[in-house]
Amino acid sequence: MKSSLVILASSIFISFGWQYNNISLREKTSNHLSFTKADGDSSQSIRITNGSSLRHLPAIIRDLTAALNKSEFQAGSLLNKNGIRVYLYDVTCNSFENAAAVRYQVNDTIFHLKLNRYNKLATDKALAATLIHELMHCVLLDIFNNARRGDEKALATIASFGANGNDSSQDFKNHFFNLINGGDAGQHELIYQLFYPQMVSLLERFAELHHDAFSNQQESGRLMWSGLQEIAAYKKLQADEKSNIELTILEAKGVKVNLEDY
Image (cartoon, rainbow, N blue to C red; front, side, top):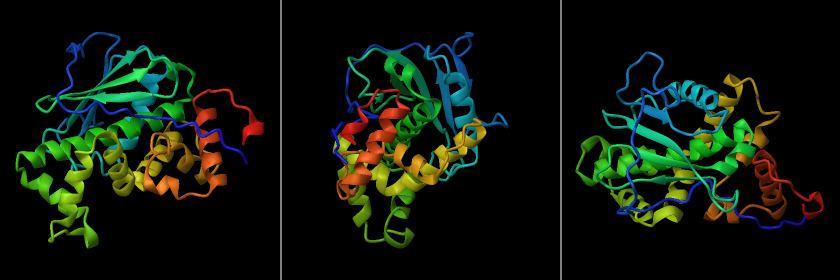
């Protein structure tokens, strides 16, 4: 197979200190839907407020939130007591390749997640994969921000990521901070190292709830590589598998491809 070597970025992370116009949060208006835990408990949860015009997004967020409620990302083991608030809104980019990005400053209390309007061509599963990827950035940054303030739970969470589940040597703590301070590239390494299998499971659970289950496990795993195609683990994959991953992502994003290139 030949590969056109298209790199698809689910996330272009905007680093700390970036200046932007504040987005007003209008949760009570009819076109701004807020999703939280099914029991109404907003503590230690990921809360998503939708300000995007993408037509299928409300149903996607509904089912993704239901999948999150059964995952470790929503159970409180990784999050601080206040949970995470994420606001979605639209932007227009010049191409489909940058599907979404998180905008955040150190003292913010909400993550602003901008979605490329090209996502209107994407399947629901591709959009869910993009949201999962971006939420992992938010989880990492929430842990980082709290650890930076000396929060004991956040520091313990980082230590739990180490070898044998307890990094008493502090080696992984240093590794974590070095990578997360490396911006988008470093965070993608962490997302893969810490969360990739759980992200695939979350995407599969979403697809089941959305009544659009994957035909096989390979498809969900390949789609969840979206945005992670510059990390070390991806570069070690065989060329044929890279081509299959790229084709899966492009087709899910609604991009016409020339099969002769694969």
